[in-house]
Image (cartoon, rainbow, N blue to C red; front, side):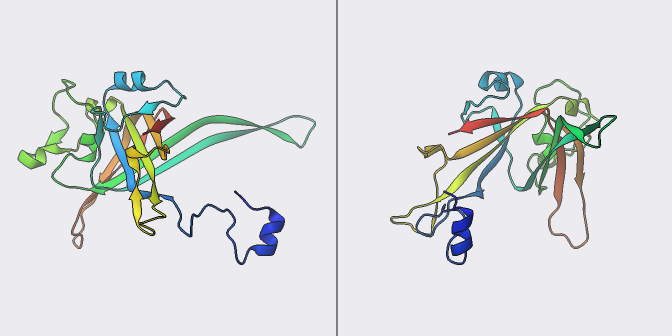
Length: 226
C-alpha cells in the first residue's frame, strides 16, 4: 500500500514509499527464476490461447524448448504518436499509432544449438543451406538468408518471484515456481517471431564467444503461468 504525499513528506527518512517488504525481506523477480523458451508449432499456440486473452500455460509442455546459457534478454516496445493540428488553432490532437517491438537475446556460443538453430522451425523439408560443421558443430546455423528463417516461431518468456521464507529460511531465496499456490508467475508470449539480425564476434583477449540475435514479433500476448 502506497503512502500519501503528506505522510511521505513527514516520514520519508524512516519509511519506504511503498510498504511491500515482509519482515524486512522483499520478494522480487530474479534472473534465477526466469526462462526463455521457444514453441515451433503454431497450431499448438493457437490452441493454447486466443490473441489478447490470458490462458494457462503448462511450462513443462513438450512444445516448448528452453534456451540454455542465455546471458541477456532485452525487450523494447515503441508506439508512434501522430500529432494532428488544424487551421485556426495552435493546439493539436494526438493519435496513437501502431506498436512495434523487438527482443534482443545474447548468450554464450557453445557446442549445443546456436541461436539461429533454436529460433527456427524443425522438420521443414527445406534444403540444408543454413548449417555448417560436423559432429558437435553441426548445430551451428549461420546463413540467415536461408528460407528456413522466413518461417516464424513463437517465443515464451516466463518469470517468477523469488520469495523469502519468513519462518525458517529468512534471508534465503525460496523459489515457488510451478508449485506455488499464489500464481506468482508471469508470462509473455511473442507471437510470429522472426530474426532480422544475427551477430557474433571474436577477439584475441576473449575466452568465450558470445552471439546475439534481434527478434521482431507480431504482438505480445500476456499469459498466466503455473
